[in-house]
Amino acid sequence: MAKDVSIITQGCRLNTFESEVMASYAKDANTGQTIIINTCAVTNEAVRAARRSIRLARRDNPLARIVATGCAVQIDPDSFATMDELDFVLGNAEKMQKQNWNFAQDTARVRVNDIESVTKNAGHLIDAFATRARTYIEVQNGCDHRCTFCIIPFGRGNARSVPAGEVVKQIAHLAKQGVAEIVLTGVDLTSWGDDLPGRPRLGRLVRQILRGAPDLPRLRLSSIDAIEIDDELFELLSTEVRIAPHLHLSLQAGDNMILKRMKRRHSREQAIELCQRLQAARPEIAFGADLIAGFPTETEAMFKNTLDLVTACNLSYLHVFPFSARNGTPAARMPQVERNIIKQRAARLRELGDKQLAKHLDGHIGRTREVLIEKNARGRLADFSQIAVKDAKIARPGALLNVVITDHDGQTLNGHLAQ
Image (cartoon, rainbow, N blue to C red):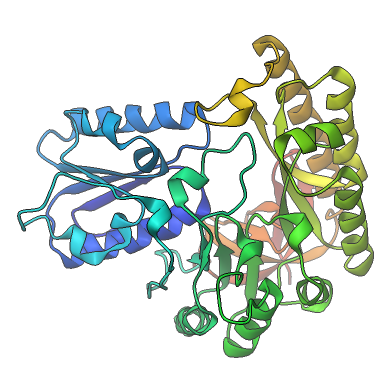
């Protein structure tokens, strides 16, 4: 958020980073009262939410300049262009170009070009997010894979990487500002380096970050594709204490036939093996996962394999998506599961997820853990467990404190400062 500039960020962590860049550009351009809606398109509901946000923004701010951007806009610019509530419509490439935020110039109202023509990904030097607790950094964008349920490659384009030198420079700059945790983000994070000379892997980048930013207390990876974890990255995840012991895995399902129909590149057995190997090497590591309930052709037996995967991988944080057919994807043309069955399966997955989270939180009771304070005396452990610290109200966001954990409510730990 900048003066006279407010941003509604929907969707992924990558959007969170890009919103910070846009706020900086809009502030430098002195845009006046501007509301930016940075949209998501991962589900049909996400697109509907984007339209609702635009209409509400205009209703509540009749004199503001309202700009829509993000994946929903990139995928379907014509329909957003017809919304009278909008002053400007920017594509995903255009929103990251500083010149497009100078609205004083005679510029086109709709600026959305072919995202698949974008071949390079430049770094963007930003200052710390307002809290200084956690800052997201884009190291990769786009995706070369075509999972049958996913529309996002059409909003983000082909995979492209930010060169390592630019990433390290940015993170070292933020660490010196006192940022306690950096989260590496991307659409397909583990594909980082495929388009760079020598095709380095993500593990190489992580090692360079740790060496180049010695003042950084904690480095976290956002959602990754389990099958693409390279040997160097596995070693670092297993041994490097500055890397948060937490991974969010893009698993999607636990049945091999469904995985094949999704065009995922891993099997059920590979997912389980990875989780077991990492937990053996680093017992404190915690896993989250994206899982889809009710993918086309999914039978009850297939769904049970997904339920079983949750316990086999010892997943603690579930991000459950009831399947929603996206026009233009192959999965939308497959035989669909009934909506009421999809809802029931999503509810069963979430119920299991609640049990898994409670079991995970049980393991922290009575122990002293380091907590990164975010705001209002709340924060997270390194393994992403959420915690409320009753006597840390004066602690500044970004502080790292030792906390004795006393109990939890099923979702959030409770604790007090260690003596």
